Length: 118
Image 1 (spheres, one colour):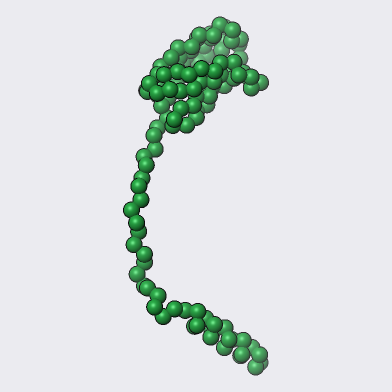
Image 2 (cartoon, rainbow, N blue to C red):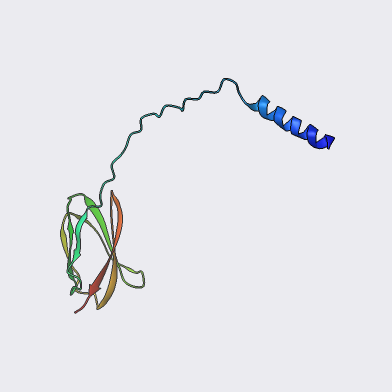
């Protein structure tokens, strides 16, 4: 019983000694923070028509440089080009199937599916 009482007294002593008497009640003042607005991705109406016959258009709302990569279903890179604005792409070597398009620009990356039916 005496050990429990001594341990309780010790705990209270440690607690009260660790508390600072000069602590402030007021919360710290928040500093101003610069907010950078998010830039929307520059693809406006995406890719059309789909399905296509090997000719398709990438419609954008900017003339900034964008990287376009077209992959087949096995992940092989078939087209790798840079566009500036709305661009039509013609590739008569594309066979029927689904292709993956990756468009990269300063705002980020976006993925699309393109279906080719001839």
